[in-house]
Length: 104
Image 1 (tube, rainbow, N blue to C red):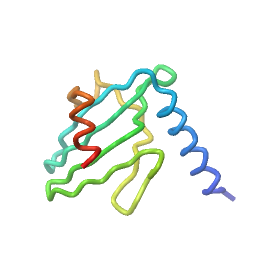
Image 2: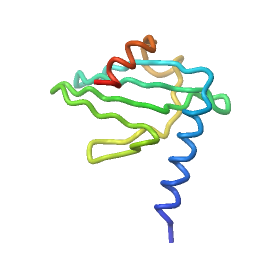
Image 3: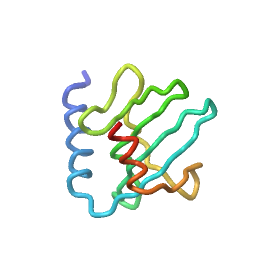
């Protein structure tokens, strides 16, 4: 039997350690096909960029935020897939732009 609480605790610990230990952070934005805006804060881990904070601003103006402090809710979840700015349709943004959305 799968221990979902243990898996969640391990995920929280992993993302928290990345967030607290990060010396380099990168920020990106993505516009989805419905016009929603996705904002990502990512850090390098094992030759990949791992998203540690993610915010979605829906076309209706709703804001959903995910991090180790809140991995998921009824609207979505923090991505568990590494991002690749060379392959993924992402726009580099400033830390200030990300924080403006994150702190809304």
